[in-house]
Image 1 (cartoon, rainbow, N blue to C red):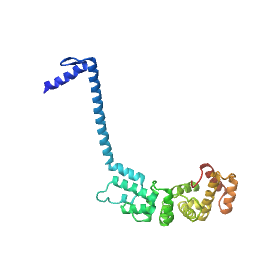
Image 2: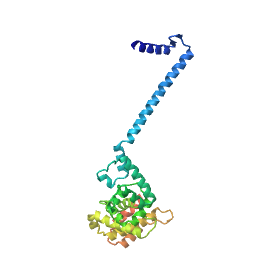
Image 3: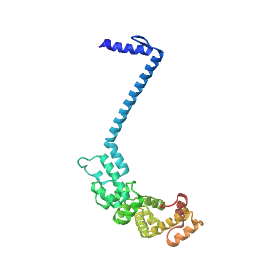
Image 4: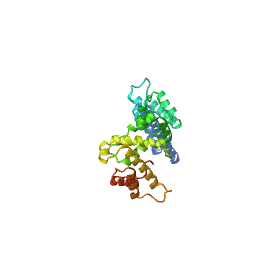
Length: 278
């Protein structure tokens, strides 16, 4: 056994030096053999590397912690997260179902919600649906707007999930419209959104409301003024932009108890940052 291994090793050494047991090898033969050895070594490394990558991908595909992170980073809230997992549960399977349900929602919101409920992902509760919407960014905003217009109970719970404490009014309105997109045209739905926002903003900032002497009705007026100002300042079709003085005068005419400085700061915010409902 030892002699056999020695002979193999010695033969390889001779081949590298251009010899064989039978005698000299030509330089051309020596070069060919060296090239073959290099090619075989490279091939073995590639094969070995391919096996490593395959096993790595296979391990990742079955990594439950990875799939759990993907689920919760994309769909921040699901009713099933807070339940004992059913038999045969896996986050990989849940991810596939959440993805399928989101695609279904973006085609037909009602069917999408029903799909989530049928899989046990969501409870049949306006509050649970609202939390799911609030923590999810994969839903088509146009379809979502249609759904919320039809499901005012879900809309109510969605509004209460916002915390506008210590936020400047235009910034709070922007945050609100990032979650609940404003309709493209004025109408009853837009009025409903602004009304709900005004009450929620006042509820989050009771001290500020007392200090400024603002009521939900006054905040409602300010929100409409901010939307109109946003359109005026950002629209290329409006040539004569509203001045700060004009905005202060018009706004205080509609809400007389508001200070001039406060209204001036509202104008500056829109002028510098932009549309509140873009």
